[in-house]
Image (tube, rainbow, N blue to C red; front, side, top):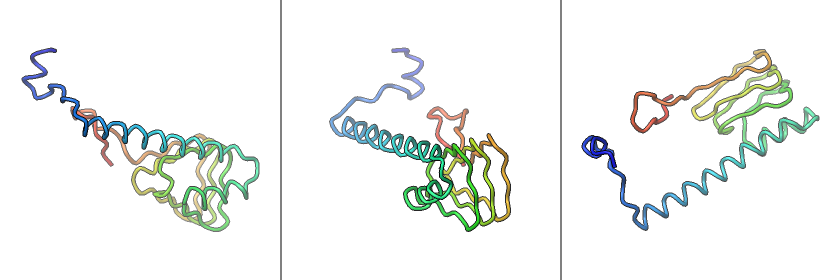
Length: 132
């Protein structure tokens, strides 16, 4: 181990049983989350607009207004934080980042292939934590 890392407080943590169980639980939760994202991606491939909207609203918990149209291949993180207003159109291949609250208003038209992020990693932080 590099002594400079130890002096700076970056020594490896000893793996206790509790820490091991935390890591296992975290990996399992991450797997469930990734599977949920995968299901959301599959929903974006369904050719029926009505079925896609149904799934986004009732399976993924998005708040979507009336007369809103979402084209093919919508991808998203944390759909519960995403609200889309009425009479709004989202083009195909859009990515929405719901790690923090994301609201798209009424009467909005977003072009295809747009990516909307509301969270990023702090590149100056040693643990690279997320900031919103």
